[in-house]
Every structure is written in C-alpha cells, then in structure tokens.
Length: 67
Image (cartoon, rainbow, N blue to C red; front, side):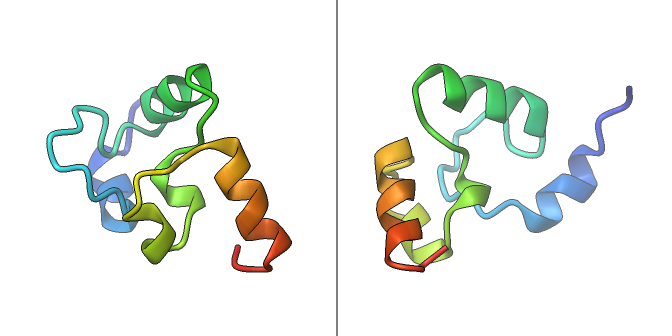
C-alpha cells in the first residue's frame, strides 16, 4: 500500500519537529503504542503540546470530555 504522507501531513498536529514519522501514520501509531502512548492526532492541540501522550492522560481527557 502506498503511504499518503503529504495528505497525512495536512492534518498532523504533532509539534515535535524532529520527528521522522510525521505523516507516516502506520509508523507513528506503531511507535507510540509500543510505549503505551497514543499519537498526537488523538489529542486536542493544547493537550498535544504537553508531550504527555500516555494512555492515562488520554483517559483523563476523555473523563473530562475534552476529547
């Protein structure tokens, strides 16, 4: 399957600039899940900027109805 990197970058809200996985969603998801995290696109912009991508942080946001 061909990656739609350029199209994916249009909606990628990751603020970690040196990230080599930007726009390559399958690699990004795989990388973060291995670390018990979710990728930036699962978080609202304000929460993403904290770089806390943990499952626990996501659960707290869901509980507060922020996601």
